[in-house]
Image 1 (spheres, rainbow, N blue to C red):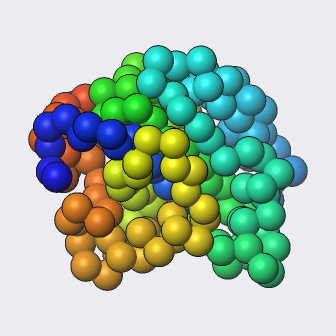
Image 2 (image 1 turned 90 degrees about the horizontal axis):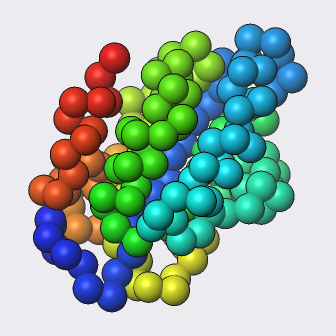
Amino acid sequence: MQGGAHKGMHLAELNLGILKYDWDDPRVQDFVNGLDLVNGVAARSPGFVWRMDDAEMAFEQTHEDGAMGANPRMASTLSVWEDVASLEHFVWNTVHKRFYDRKAEWYDMGASLRFCMWWVPVGHRPTMAEAMARFRHLEQHGPGDHAFGWDHLREAELWKDKACG
């Protein structure tokens, strides 16, 4: 299903991040203070479908029974978009890009893989367990129809120019 239209499907994405400092550290406050703004822009963006709410995400990231390893500095997003163009527009053409450009200030960039996408049926809301399984699959097997990054999507263009910097 690489490239092209995906009838009856939406695009899910998991963005994994570990902050360099605790959430209350002044060195990450620009990031923390901007979360509501960025999430609000996402929710109002054309093509936005769903984002895991803050309480559920906090549980998944920090609780021992969560799917993400109980790291108190985890800062991630799980969302669903109508199509590639909608997600690309949000990531590269909104206020999100200003935060993306500063990621090295706030995130521990040691982990190479931090982002995963996959197609889901319209109406499906992925669980964090599902998202982490897709992420691990991508990590272990590389991109394919099961899990992929921007470079797997023929229709994705903006990331080529805007991801660097």
